[in-house]
Image (cartoon, rainbow over all chains, first blue to last red; front, side, top):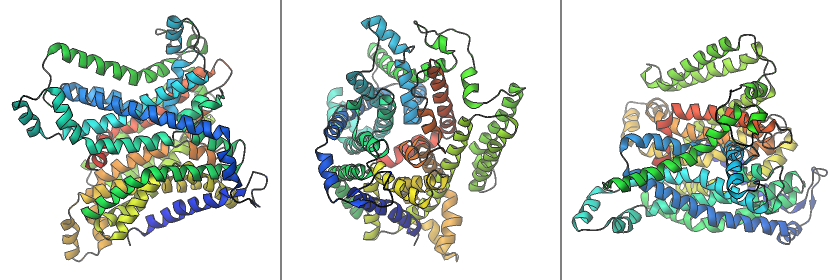
Length: 280
Length: 334
């Protein structure tokens, strides 16, 4: 009874759109014939799979996930462990500084990072001084910029979660291991890592999902400098829908994306299901 | 872990942390600096750190013409909002239900914001700011009200259907927004809701609903059943018990969830970009400043970015305890 409003919202506004998306993906629609879509069956899907730009976007998305996620998790973990070592009094200041990229919204954050690389920017100047050439946006440099932004903006989340996890580390175990003469590295290996195992899984999953649907930063960094090879899947779908106005094809792409994500997600969903069943 | 006592190792740790903190803060520092420069200073060959600051970028962004007594206007507005945030931060000490306090503060603040254009000639950027507030506030109110009901229901009801709803919601949460938005765009075009706040609010509520439910549920789970049971023994039905007994002790959880909903609604770019044509929110508006050919665009973009960041930083500063609590509570337990 209590759930009905929320259930209604989710059914009407999530399940129904997804079905519409599947329906739209089987039609040829542009802005011109928006009221009378033409049924074309699976043609859109065939077109997507034979589209080189789609594959290049797909490759870059996968590269992005493969590089950004481990980078974020590793840095977050490292900084969290180090943060755990320093005195409580100064921690607050560090945490406030670390959280800044997390708080500002992605668009603003990207604009701010971009400011450093503008022609009068700080990094641009340093680059000129050290390398001797102007910093220009090429395919490679845009891609590195996107990854750098991912490190800057994505690390705070894993950092804070790991740090909170470290606070719940069972002290008796640590003390017992010290009495047994365990070195610090072994403590990390045998106490800390097992304790944080579920957190690693959690952050890993969230980060992959976030990396998969990255849009804002790539949009800002590639706009005005159309380096299309640095596009990710969401951005290519967006451009297909809004600039090329091939709505049917864009919907086909988004259906493909949903299926891909669900394949990755299903084991995790199943695990959550089991946990919840046991918990009740 | 036991603290390291070796002084040199500790120094290295501090050095690494400080470097990383600089890395985190550097873009803010530099953008703020740039936003107070003239285009000429901002494009200087060697970056300027000491210069005569100018507020021209901000006035150009926000105002059509500068009012006659800018200092007075700013001071009055600062006083009003300072007072309001003081009241909000100390809501639990006021002997009225916290919900009313927050509502009153929001209503007064919003009213003042709407009245500003009557005595200061504002630029369109200000309208985008108002749009953002309307959309964000609307999303938070609707999302939290229905999310509370559902979260409470799911925390107490333990049947199989509840588990399935939770898992499906988690699945929805993981899908990219774009897969919902394209159909919405299509609906919007057909129903005439395209480019309205209503459509934005509806979609934002829907997209954030799974997250809201999960988070609120985890807070409701911490409230012992006996509390509403004792109220129900006294003759209240479940709904009255929920409203009069559970909600008042849930405020920390609600504020925490509302804060995350705010961050999500405020930051949403893709959805607003697709579903609006002119009724933009701040995020879409500032993305327009991202590129541009004229040399002034760097400083203007910097001012726009700082302007969009400040409201969110203020809100987070007021409710910072709740943010960290929210970040850690849901995650660490799961």
